[in-house]
Image 1 (spheres, rainbow, N blue to C red):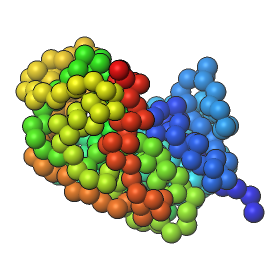
Image 2 (image 1 turned 30 degrees about the vertical axis):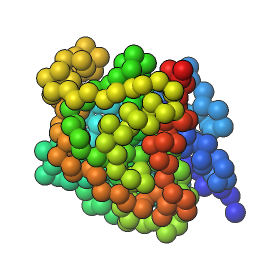
Image 3 (image 1 turned 180 degrees about the horizontal axis):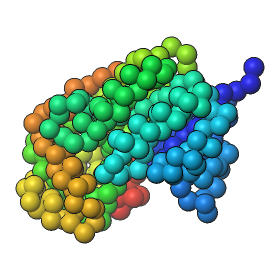
Length: 284
């Protein structure tokens, strides 16, 4: 039997690059989609396509059995993903695996959660075989705080709320199983870490791993926004403030077994993440 051909969108990103490795260990033939014609993805057939260019996406989908649908941060990301799903159905793609977000729902006050829910709802209406993955806050998002963590601190508007944050390596492993397995049709898997942790607990884990004292400071929405101004576009800053308000309300603390259900092993703890990334945070 020939191995399935899997198209990975966002193939050069944090999850996409890890997913390609996971798929190859499972015997899949991988087609990596990138917008950059200068990039070649090791271990995969590299195709150049942009979600904003339907013709290039249609060409990338030729001969594909299953597809992993992720997208770069775009204000119109939901519509780009919806169009991808339509093209995939027309090209005969057998299964879609959607990268959504924890607590996605159409009536959410958080724009990112609404956008993901719109994509989920559209794919359900299409009737295509699909699986939805809803990961919680990525632990790798802490790498974006790297500059201040190296100075011994980081800040966010979250207070003492706990979040069942997840390592993106576990998201990739779960996605690989959903793409190659046959028993996940129509299922929604919520992906979290093994426990909910506060940002103060994260700071302690980073301190232990790096051998340096790292502290967490509460930030107001205004200070958080000011720090991101000029780094991210205004719509994305506003969305992140909404995300953190969602976390601060205690709405992202539930622990789910999605990673273990899909991969057969427990999700990585924040201690594992901190140990494996200590160099990035300025190991003493």
